[in-house]
Image (cartoon, rainbow, N blue to C red):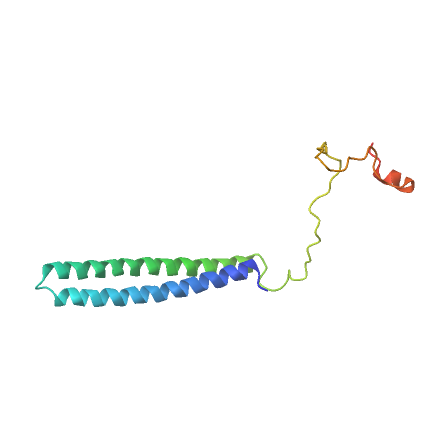
Length: 138
């Protein structure tokens, strides 16, 4: 089972690789549609259409390249943060959560609200006599 940090590093790495693949695809498509626009210079409407599609793919190439750089930087910074914090190994793997969420020093002023069919609240706690000292409130 991986930690959240390892999961994020793997996710950003995978997203960066995917963005690089998308960038290559859009660059290829931009080149194809630019060639189609050049082939149809006799028909201005088709040439304009193909060129606008090529420009769209060219814009997506830039966008995907920026995304790849972002995800790669995120993965690197997460790895560096982990090393800088001294958590690059399984140093913290032996820490077991103990389940303690807090210590209540006093009882709250909450009052039970009676509901239809519910048992009534006891006047005094149901505690055997020998344990009364443990639960008394001063």
